Image (cartoon, rainbow, N blue to C red):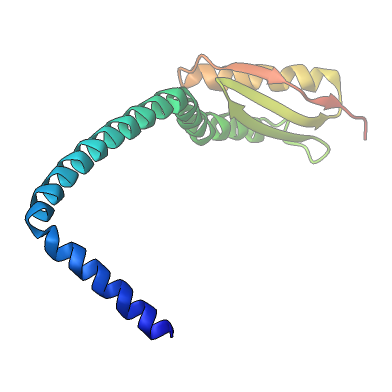
Length: 145
């Protein structure tokens, strides 16, 4: 039964296909032209959307690249200066250095407030040596041993 229905449908399509053969080539040509035009418009819309998204996120990408550059240059510069300083290079002090958005962050703890200020001075001097205008944010806690 299913085979008979399928055969009947195929014959019906074949009959209408033969009757419309002359028009098929012309219709195909028109359909192709319409589809090409629609595809071109879709590509243009997609390209505009990509441009908008790229421009929207470009400042974030630029900032991310800047932060990465600072982490590669400023962080080790300040960390090296702190480790080289005999007052700060003490096992009772724990100073971590991070850099982002043109700010060097000193985190952790030192044993007294004089060392906290000294850490800022050492960091500022190290940044000046390399010609950086980055700021220093001293977030060190004073923690007595």
